[in-house]
Length: 194
Image (tube, rainbow, N blue to C red; front, side, top):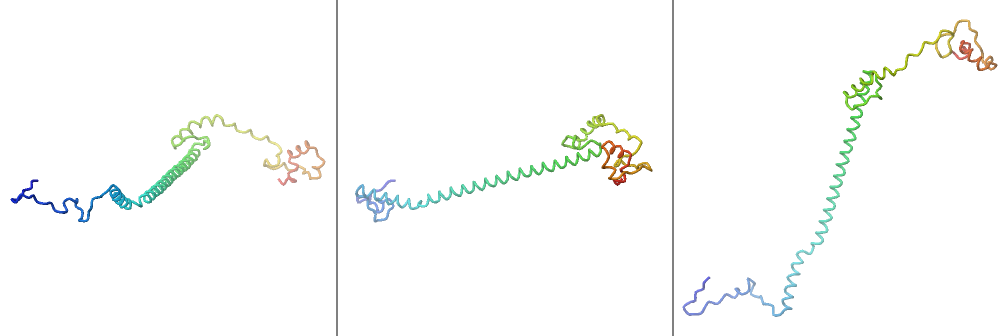
């Protein structure tokens, strides 16, 4: 930037505000170090006043972050609890379904439901088919038919006609062997209400 000197030979004088760095006309440079320290302290004081509530805001922000974290934790806990309950519910449904299939296969095959193992209808049916021959082989033989003769009370049938019935007084004087023999012969049927 070049300045031209007027023909009179005197350079132009700067405007009064040019040396004051854009300050108003009442600026005075600090005369001593103490003045400079005072000016800097005032400036720092004004700046600190702008951020006076910073610590309070910082504390509040930390508390808010803690609350949000705890709420998030609670939400995560709730979500985990819901997932566990849903899994437990599904387990109960599966167990109930398998129990129903066991009952169905047991009715169809004659294999006891308690003996069946498997988690699907097909597995239960295959296990029942494998167990059928084993159950048939292990089945006890039919009990023999009862011998013909006098009936014992409680075994059904009627005593032969004309069998003399005994009384409670007769019973008091009998031995255990005599009592058993009379019972087999049906002589206590009237006394026993048969």
